[in-house]
Length: 389
Image (cartoon, rainbow, N blue to C red; front, side):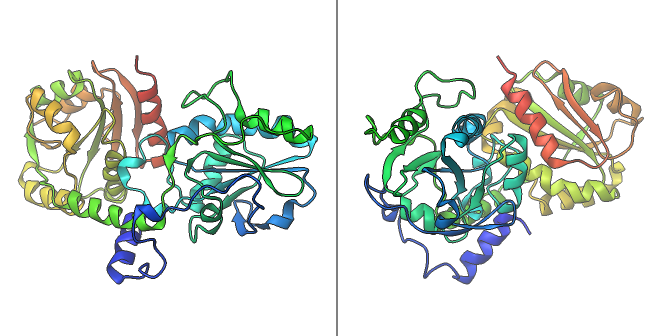
């Protein structure tokens, strides 16, 4: 079951009514300087449960609310590890906390990382960035992020040896630059606290993606309902259209998938492809599915596509029209299947499923034959987008 389905079920059942804030105006305020560190009991990606007392030996406790999906958090991930490595022998304990509720994220908020903010994917994110410090999950009840008033990701809270808050705000002025920075508020604050001095800038704004509070689950259900109301079409494809698809005269990165209703792996992975498209819909990404079912099976293929809600994103309507096309789903009707293979992916052996990522102008940036590792495919999409001028 996907996070979207879970969120819809919770809303339908009214299970969250008693615990969710009624409006966005009820978002907790940022903890004031001088306040005591809130206690907590949270599970880490290592399977251990951590409390405030777990870090009693640290001279300084540096809590950073972050997550797996936010581009600001993604850009800061390497710098967080850098802070940990530089200060761990000075008595500083860095602890990262994912305070986001994974079911409160719409798919279109997930276009900058291959991961959601679920607990299960936190370990994958941490592994990618070589994190060697605790990464805790607070997304289920959001008790610690609420107590601290974590507004965005990342949001830093630095507590001294008496566990009094000495600094809160952003890490630095890097924004979404993953490299080195000229101004690091987190390092300045840590240096001051370790030296027993006052922090010069005690409070800064924490710029980044907003915390995904529990009450936002309703937005996810609304977005799902809107997507399911979109029209799904299936058009015929001949050799000329196949060549146009490959030429890619648009400015979009194209994700092209060859599939069939009789192909087990195709059926299994197709919902992930649709969700991937929805995640990247507000970036310059277009999803094109091509079924290799016989032409006389068009009706059954179209029924499958509608059942999987393989619709066209609003952001692609203009570029599709400019490209002279009417759908993002096609069935090959051009006779010899070698023609569509030669037109789009000459290295394709014919085995289904087959997936390619096309750059504007038609260069194949990535290809995979067989069942997809959806995370690796999303990483390839991100790489393609980041490599653009």
